[in-house]
Image (cartoon, rainbow, N blue to C red; front, side):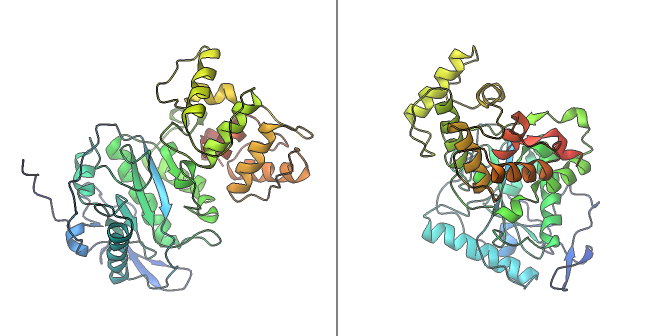
Length: 372
């Protein structure tokens, strides 16, 4: 069956109608005004406009509801060329890398944001499905989440430095549109390393996420009552990485004997489901760490505590860029890292780890962060 004709959006990208921004390098960059009408998506440079290669295979639409946004950095150089031409080169280089080196059928992510603040369509049909707002094109940016998460790549590498303001502003604008279209919220914005073993999106960039979420929530007009007290990451058997290691540590703290390898394999799946059954919770067929599962699994920690749960919190704090030492004992360095975590997410000052601190540490979102 022939696909619907793809609408070609305005080729000018963010164009001359935008407001001038000044980057850290002092170069003026044109970006779309914050309050412009986004209904037509004409400010996003589509695949035709940047000269994308045709996909090498069929692109499918997901039957799973979209439930989150995942933000990436591209691990590309932090260039000082903020032009539209550079954004187009970036999109082409990314597609070539994903198709020729990774063997994917097209660009892996749905959208790309350049350091100059230009927003481009990544995978073909991403704009089409965003305009329709009911299904997303299945992507390749995060195994386990490709059919239910919109992926946004951001030009640059942000392990030790922050992205330009123009990039952050355009990222916020894009997240707002995606949230409105798919019925998502600011507390549905996550980072790549919340679901896989990777340094992406970079510790410094990740530290900006509470601010980015606050800006998205403000643009959406979200009230405090609409924000859950804790929005835990919905880890399931199709993902892996550091957060899965935390789950394995916590299960071991509760008496299980799992290898802490970050692989959500059959033994971890069985342990999660057994824990759910023992707690009188619905047993999820995919061993999803539901909010109720997280709440029952985490334990309060304070100075002097030891054991697998302490190993877990020290590990994830260090992984997320906090200055925590993996000593096995809840010590002064751990207290300092926990205080930094709590401060970043707007939690009340404390020298201990409670459920909200756990939630923030593993990549979840806490209500207090929107009031910070």
